[in-house]
Image 1: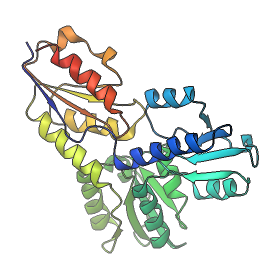
Image 2 (image 1 turned 90 degrees about the vertical axis):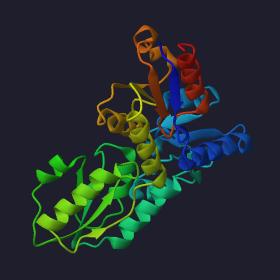
Image 3 (image 1 turned 135 degrees about the vertical axis):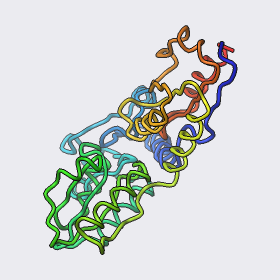
Length: 286
C-alpha cells in the first residue's frame, strides 16, 4: 500500500507561462467584443487551451486569417519566427507579445552572435515552435539536432566557425556533453551561449533527486510539452518506473497501490488544479 507521496516544489507554471497567460487574461478583459487570437497554442497544455477556447480565444496558424483593425493577436510563449513577426506587424492588428523573456533572451543572443560566416548549432527539437523561432535569428547556416548521437551524424566542416545554443528547456548535462564534443572535434574556440532556463534546470534536478528516492514516478503535463517529456526522461534515466499523464483519469490506481513511495512532478505549463487533482487521487491510496 502506498505510504508516501513526494510532490516536487517546482511543479507547475514557470514564470514565462504565468506571464503569457496573464497577458492573455488582460487582453480578454480589455478588448471585449474584439476578435482575440493566439498565433499557435499560447502554451502546450490542452486543458488550459480548452478553457480559453470557451472564453472565445481562437488559435490560428495563418496570419492571413486576421482582419486588419479588428483583431488582437497574442504571440505565444514559445515565440515566433522573425519573418512571421515582421509580416504580422504589417497586418494592422494589435499585437501583444507574450514570448517568454527567457526565449526572447535566447533569440537576441543568437542574433548578436550570428554572422553569415558563423553557423548555429542548436540543441533542440527540430519541429518545436520555439526552435523554429530561434533559428530565424541566425544569419549563417543552422544545424538542429535533438541528441549528441544525431549531432554526430551531421556533416560539419572543421574549417568553419560555429556557435552553440540550446532550446531553453533542454537538459544541461546533455548540453555540456555536446559542447565538449564540438570543441574537441570541430571548433576549440566554440562560442557557447547560455540559453537554457534556470527554471528548467531546477525542475530537472528536483525530478532527478525525487526519482532516486521513490519506487514510482509520475510526471503531469501536456503530451506535446517538450519540457514535460524531458522531466519524464530524467526520471526514467534513474531506472525508476515512470508515467507521463495529462490528468488524474489516466492513473491506474490498482497498479499504483503496490508502490510504497511515489514521486510527483509536473511540466512548466501544467496548471495547479490538475497537479492537485493528481496529488489528492494518489493520497487516497494511502
